[in-house]
Length: 316
Image (cartoon, rainbow, N blue to C red; front, side):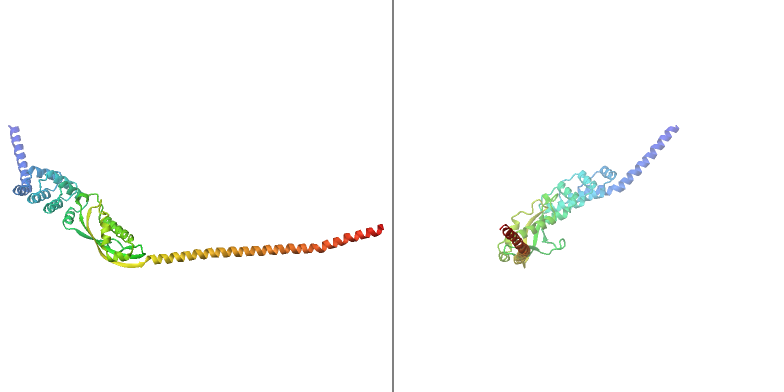
């Protein structure tokens, strides 16, 4: 009898605890379930509870699903939202990007948008730039210390140019594609190369668009996250006469080389002259020594002749 009462009491306690748990869960998740139900983004109450157990914010999931359903996006599984949330992504930004891409008739699916977001790129800004291209200054004074792109034409005249590059995002190459800095560097290199290949600076000044056409023909936006729409030469000025300065420097260098060679020849001549003077002095010394031997030889000759004479006289 006592055991039955204990069982009944335990069952009542269990029922009360279960009721409290159900009540708490009901009050916590009912408004989310109801919101998803009435908007067509239905998520079961058990799924909502399991989301909390998996440390997923159910409110963020419901908000994103409601936004996607109301915008008419293709059905996206709840598991995809949860996986991206757990990976540290921003599901709200992805849905906003998908809506913007759909309105602009841009081909963008959930997987691509999620990959862009997880790569650290602003997917909404990428879609916005695809719709509304942006302008990049080349060179950009905020990123580089230089304000102009300096090139030298074949006639030796320096030209200082500034360009404005209009680009739009290439969503297919946004992941792993080069950034704006690469585009600026490539365009700058192309402009300097185009100026350098011009026969005269006057041709460039008369038709600046020839530079833009030459740069666009090189497909500088390959393997980048952007597609170059246009390149406009904003300003171009004449700089220094680099050719004349280089010729002057070359002439100065040649003159220094000539001076060095002349000095070398002069030094050799001075050395040769000194050597010849030493040789002359040496020869003079030999002559003097030879002259000093003459009296000795004469005396010896006289002495020998005198002895002969004495000998003849004695014999006779």
